[in-house]
Length: 67
Image (tube, rainbow, N blue to C red; front, side, top):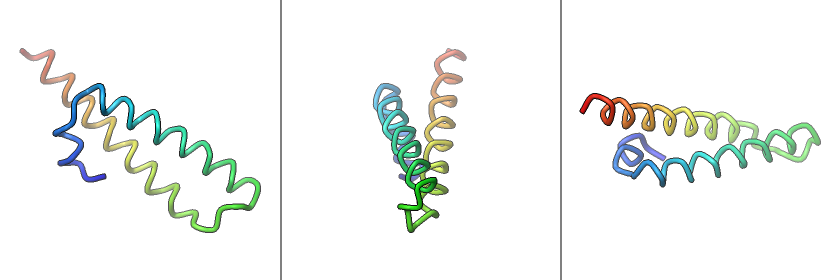
C-alpha cells in the first residue's frame, strides 16, 4: 500500500491494517521455517508496509498533539 493512501486513512483503520499485516508476517515466517514459502521477498514487502503504517500513525499523533 502506498504511503499517500495510508495518510488518508483514519487512525482506527490504520490500526486494523497494522494488525492484519503483523499476523501475515508471522504466518510467512512460519512458512519460511518449514520450507513452504517460495517467494521470500514477500516478507520484505510486508515489513515495509508495516513501517509505513507506523510512520503514518506517528505523524497523525504528532499532528494531534501539536494542536
